[in-house]
Picture 1 (tube, rainbow, N blue to C red):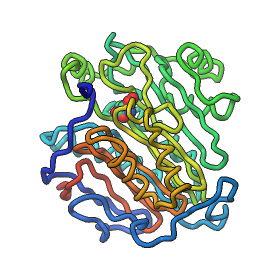
Picture 2: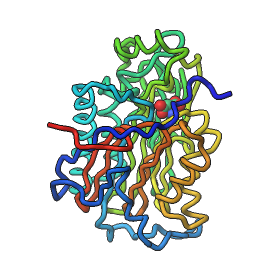
Picture 3: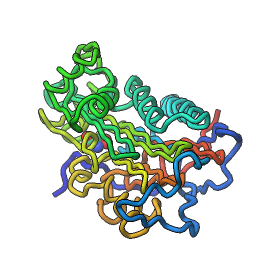
Length: 366
Ligand code: ASP
């Protein structure tokens, strides 16, 4: 019997939210977009699949890379299709704002690591999303936050779990990566480390919003809350990075840790293959090492990022578990989910720029 925390199965109802907001370097509708789903990834065309051996250098040598690509998500729950226009617009505006900023930064030669951290940080401060401010409540009516970040150059990674007073868990995750010999700090140790690196604590109530409190009231039998945030990017130097941050699942038990701070489950980046951020039922993502599986399929089976993401999301995971965003070291973007919807956006050096919520989409009116 599946847990009541699982996402609802996908329903094929034609609806909503495809927004083209002008591109990075070009504007206007994306001619490659399809009405029935994601724009076909360039990886769907016969691009030779990367099959590097573990010690191979990155497929594209640093410094010779002109492509850049970015994908973001704001959770793969089951946002109600009755979501009113004002809220849809607000979500889309937020996602488009961080996407544009990130895309511009990558276009100027910014690093993928800086871009993914910056995007996730901004979304953590945005109360619409289940990360940082706006995080869901635990069963006890508190907030326990998880985050991780990974640098695809040398597989460096940092993560924090169960933090309760750290305003931007993704920034702390990066500090773990850069300023400690460790990968994952949890609970009190993570809090102490935050003080050590000069992060001022915020009261736990700082993360609370009325909407999430209402969700807790309905929580035990209700749909899970959506809104975990993530970003994956390829920069002009050919470096990949991934970042994910969440409040977890509504009404989670004390001490529960999901996939988001688990490297290989909710987050992974390896310059030889791809960068991945996941969202969904964390327990399933941990069991199946979802983010690493996408990378491993590319590396060991020679699949494209689209093939690998589809195999994991539609083959390994079960309907309703969630989805992933991934970008390959060639700049191909894969966005695959098995839920009703996923807040998401993508842009690249070729002028793609789009934000969507549900699978089937129509342009959101101004
Ligand atoms: N994956 C997150 C967790 O299980 C929740 C989500 O993505 O919505 O903690």
